Amino acid sequence: MQFPVQSIRNLVGSGWSLSPRLAGRLALSAGVLSAGHWLLTDVAHIPGGGMGVVAAGAGLWWLSRPPKAPAFKEPESLKAWVQRCEQVLGQFAELETVLGLPELRAARAAELQKRLAFDDPLSLGVVATDGTPLPSTEQLQSALAGVRNLDLCIGRPLPVVGTTWSWPDDLQRLDVLLHVLPIPLRAADLLWLEQLPVDRPVWLLLAAESSTPEQIQALICQLPERWHSRLLPWEGAAATLRPVLQPVRRQLDDPQRVRQSTRQRLLRDLHRHWQAELEGFRRERFRALLQRSQWIVAGVVAASPVPSVDLLAVAVGNGLMVKEMAKIWSCPWSQDVLQAVVRQLGSAALAQGVVEWSGQALLGLAKLDGASWLAAGAVQALSAAYLTRVVGASMADWMALNAGVAEPDLEELKRQAPLLVARAAERERLDLSGFAQQARDWIRTRSDWITT
Image 1: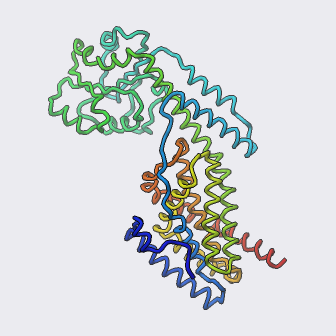
Image 2 (image 1 turned 45 degrees about the horizontal axis):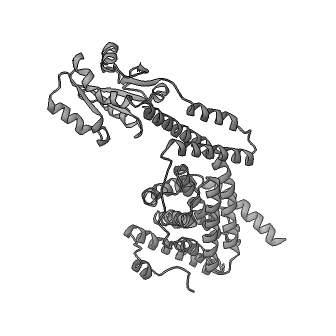
Image 3 (image 1 turned 180 degrees about the vertical axis):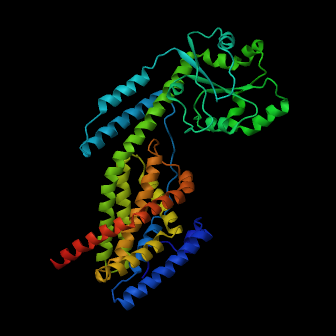
């Protein structure tokens, strides 16, 4: 019997590559599933046997057609972020209606308008870690003289031990930060810098009063490249602070641009907070979809007399599930992109041995539960359901990471797919008892239906 998948030779000729790791996994999967086929067909005398599980894994290869190159774009302007936040408000309303939750659109819309109407005076925050001396308020005011309507805010020292390394909310709302760094740097200073987003306007004032050029150069080598153009060395004399802070004054002399950047950053933070809240609603809807999809696939595989139908069931079932997931996560992705994402996650699942591991685990459960699983011919169907479960869970993680963009970046997916699948498989492995109970209920329902 020929499966509707490309041969290895054709795949290699078309530019598709088979890694040694993936080849080893496939060989091991074939060995385990061949043994399962012999056990179910020759020992238990169940027609079709383990070939249904083989076809379930092969269904992922059916999705290996080359996709069109996707475009990756996210909001880059204040207007675009406003539109994106308004779309998220609509997503909240839709999910709250479906889940029967009280609608909070008015409160969220008010928060959005509050951030858009943010019109406090231009602000500069001066901050340092505990133990690092700051310039005096008089020195700073003299060095910044000439900047109109500027609020100078001296922040509390940032702790160097026992902290979550999360910047205080009152500093997050300031337009520009002046972060004073000691020489030599401490680990805490680097950890605080790592928590600052790329779009945050920050200048680094180096307290280099008694430092040599070699020490300053060594400090520069410790910092990521993004900070090299933001360094302001200062030897500590009050008279020299004003020329050192000239780049800061130049930035603050364009208040309209600075304030627009602040509003955009505040909207980005609001969007990130909303996405975290929205994800809980999405996962609630996704659980019902995954439950339905995995047992639809299992039912078709269990009823199919030939492996090729198993293959089609897995491919179509996963495709329909992912299409519904795109609606839940409001992802306007093309079918080609969705196909490519499922293909990449499916390949990662095969490479990590999900097929052979699930087959072994289900055979173990079958021994514990007696002959009912074998008599129902359910092992290959449950393996297909489990594979759908793992791919669906990893796909949900990927969609959550990309909820704020139009289409996923496939190169980033290739990098993250193994980790996403590994986490999803580990979660499902820990919840194997729950899956087993669902499987028992499904077998019981199917047996009652067949008897009727």
